[in-house]
Image 1 (cartoon, rainbow, N blue to C red):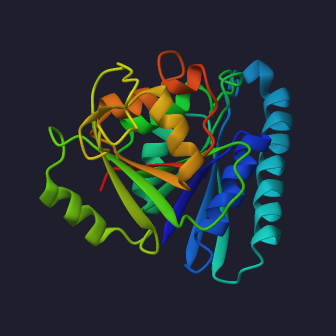
Image 2 (spheres, rainbow, N blue to C red; image 1 turned 180 degrees about the vertical axis):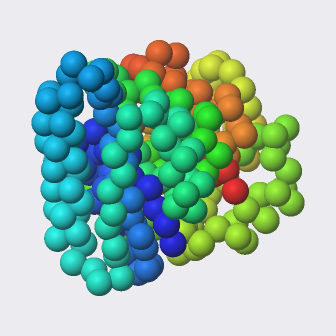
Length: 255
């Protein structure tokens, strides 16, 4: 299995790396740590460029060694990728050349959206990269995801498609999935959780519902083509993360 970890050397991305190692502790994995750096390739700046390149590559290799030591797993191999391309181009290139199966990226808190990789660009990766992605909150410690919640909009995903996804899903095969039928909109219902309004009824995916989900589940599983739901979870200006912290990992499934 080939896994890409996006890093900007911050604690948030370090935590995503550790989560990736723990999440896949029983799997043979080639981990690729990708760092994006903007270098000045002007000839007049060649001395500065060489020094900057050495420092950045050294830091990237250091992070790979730290993660290898943390893993302590002979079935886990660690590699580095340093790129000067824009984030989406660099990730797409890695997907093609390294045959990536899964991506891990840090999910910042509501006050950290200025990170060069982990801020607004994390949302861009989820929207533009067609690969399974797990966004890991910066302060989220790994625990086996026993309870997973799957918000479903039947106007986007049929029952048969749901069954097929779970049948082919290897990463969360030990998890107990709870399906919550949701609909678009941000209307609050005061009696949402009473017996008068059973959870099987389509309900709006609101901040209030998401807070309850974070308190009750270990991971949230969403379909990448459900753009509205991805927007609500990860958009750093209009989504939930603009006004509240994400506390559990978000698995964005692209197939």
